[in-house]
Image (cartoon, rainbow, N blue to C red; front, side, top):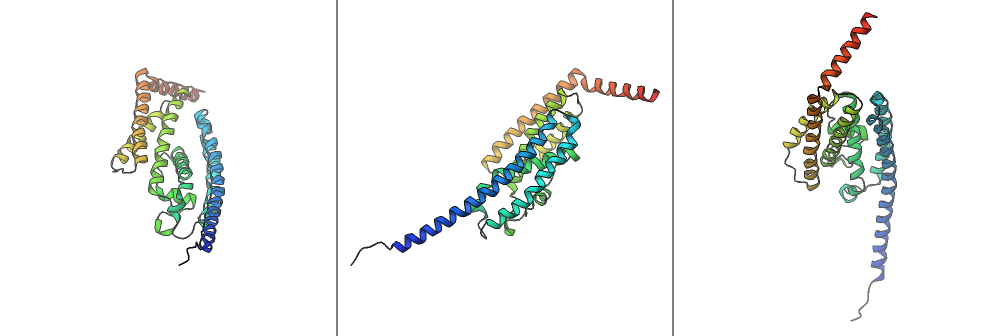
Length: 236
């Protein structure tokens, strides 16, 4: 009996490997495009930490970059073979979480509430059900929301340095509600659990900022100055 290796089998394996590498490279190209748009949106939103008067402008510019992501996600979805979403999802998980954070931040700055998963998915041109193919995972949504919490903690501190003593209180109320919401979840994902632990510190940090404002009477002083300015304007 002759012993030999069927080289044609290995040739077929190579075709499979080549095809797999091509798919992943095309995916990486599209993900880099999304990352570039997200980076531009992030840069625009950094303005809020130095100039409160430009919040509206920052949100508008960030929305333009976020909106452009929808088309790229559509192109990305076309690259994924049917039923293979989770096989390649590690390529876009991080950037999708980042975009959830950016969208959540924009919505909060504009309207003061927590954006839901359905709205985020719609803005990015994604589905919400895994049965529909390319979709927004619940865990990616939650991770993005937790990223927003850290940014709000930073924003509360910077608002004080810019003379806005009411904003930290509003952020504190929002974060307390967010913390209560996450406490209702039984988080089994290690990454989410660790990120949720960080939320507790973010909440505590903002509470300390609010306490310091109250202790120094800055919020009352700010109100008094505004009232005096209003009276002065009416007299004129």
